[in-house]
Length: 195
View (tube, rainbow, N blue to C red):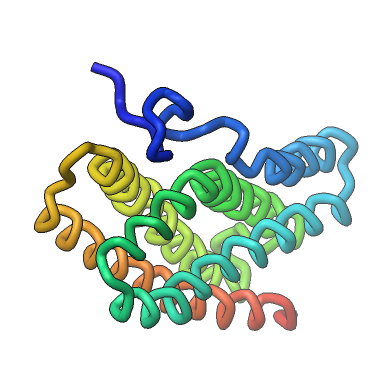
């Protein structure tokens, strides 16, 4: 059974329209691959910092700015925002999460931090735990929930109770993501000045 399109005109767009994906974000993992291929620490660090900033900024925006606004929107307004937001973040968030963590691991290895006898190894472990939590919550819970919401709002008669429950789960988890992004910034700031 084919899903209804996002628009009010059936058949015009698939669930996630390819033209609305943030294809430009693929530049960052490509940059990381080039950096690893040519052994350029600068390019590796650039891919890590750029993807980390974009990921952190998006999570903090959604958790602390969009989240509080969300509760003041009526169901129709929420549906309109979600029908545009979910497709635009479908590629963006996973690519940034994966690139940030992967490039970060290689940066830590280059800096000599990723060995157990390093003085900052506990900070690397803390960063790894936070990145795993952010990635699992983002890809394992938020993304599937957002896709369920998107599928539901495209039905001729969406279930308002389901939408309300999923929307508020997403809102709470966005706040959790924002808090963990603040924690990772504290860890990264320490690692930037670590001996």
